[in-house]
Length: 479
Image (cartoon, rainbow, N blue to C red; front, side, top):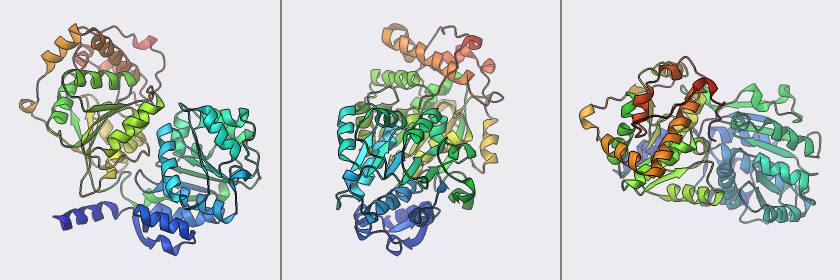
């Protein structure tokens, strides 16, 4: 049994690994030892290509899918350059890593902290939702490497005296496409304008998808002709990782929740992420399931306080099984181990979004094999063609009606009589329609083709509130 599990794991990871050990690089001995203690001895493909280039001071644009080792690909050379340059914390920040979400920043911070345990290198963390003054104190004392989200970083650059960046020599844009997708272009422009430092400062861009706009950050002095491009995905046949299955379910709108409930109920010993497009949907479905006794369901969405988000992330990451309802805040880069199923209950806004979400199933270990499942309505089947054009192979699940656990009447009775659940169901319904109406693939996801009454039943609503599509304000997906 152990041999079979090892073979499965080896097959799943063969696509991203090389046979080159870290000991064959010029990385400092303390980093090699830290990697050994963390269980890393051999480089992934993106690490093998990026580390030497960054150590040579090259500008890098690296595209590699989720779970391919991108974080170490820039953290290792960044820390090594700080060490070999003889930087001290009092000198200020030498390396800046900008990442789009608090969770990604926290994850990078914990990895970086392990790498520098044997040194005096200070790792700074600057994110919203935490004490600004404590961050300012660290920055004033000096942090050789700073990991930050755009908004809080702008604040410190403009308003924290003593924050030294005059020796900054490397800026890394982590999940570069997500930084642009989330509307951080203005903040990034301000950051680069506020940063002093040498004209030959190096810039690196890392992402699961890469386009020209990812490297078009204003005031980043990068000559595109000298940019070193790394594309690990071009060596693979598919935009997603091998080693796990991907499928889709086409069902009528009134059966969406019943299918989801049945799937979760019959896999109580599995680890499952379910993606929604709005906070309201996450909150409603999570609260409803808790109301009927499914207490182990967790939720992760951008409206939660940072302390609560971190607690939820840690709880689910360390759990052997459980269910996490999440918005796209959890879709990118977060290291959630041993995921058995990724369910996309609400439609992704693009092929790239699909890839990032399903990438959570790439984290399997101990012989566990992940699976991605996409829920589609009967009029949405054309989206499969978009995926197949990117060499993403899916098969259709068949779910006989006789096997569905029918809790529809119970759901409608509860939603109809429990006031706070009725309000949450109405809000979730409205948010779903607003998101649907703003979907960029209008030919596939057309709100005029929806059966609104039947859709309302998936929220437990016998009567649906009126939502004027033409008058809907533009909807910004939760990130």
